[in-house]
Length: 225
Image (cartoon, rainbow, N blue to C red; front, side, top):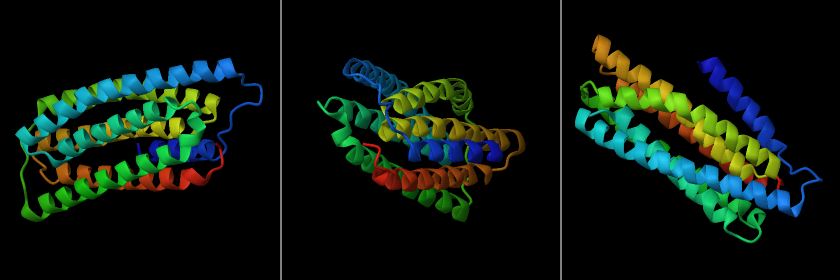
């Protein structure tokens, strides 16, 4: 899983560094792709609002740092989708490209800081989370849905030459990775009683979020706009 994650991330970084709209892209094509980007962003927002509410409520009920962190990541996904909608409401979306990437980076950094703090505190205090069947089901659902949404977003972003849309697709793909990490932590705790697996999963979520925030921040100087 780790090798696959690193390979996919490397592929995204390579694409993000060279995202340019084709020279043959017409104004009508841009408008059509812009509408598609907004539709995909809206779909992501709706799904992640539901996911965030369920994850945070289930995480608080079970005392699961990883599950609460996953829910907060879903909230970051919501902010990412809203940023894309904000960008493409502008008459010239490319004018908001750098701002969009910076806002995404800030949301990643905030998530990483909070989840890392809570995970370390749980490890130090020896907190013992309860089993969450709701959380396990939610992680499985995200693993089934998120890859397809990410693929559609990335394809649209590359066609538009928009690093912000590609970055949004990466946030969606990140949700897939985190779903796998979350599922592993919840199952280890449920099946083997390894309470430490939950905050360790939270630390993985925080580390990946921090890295993606750094890459989004660096992406603002790619010159693709």
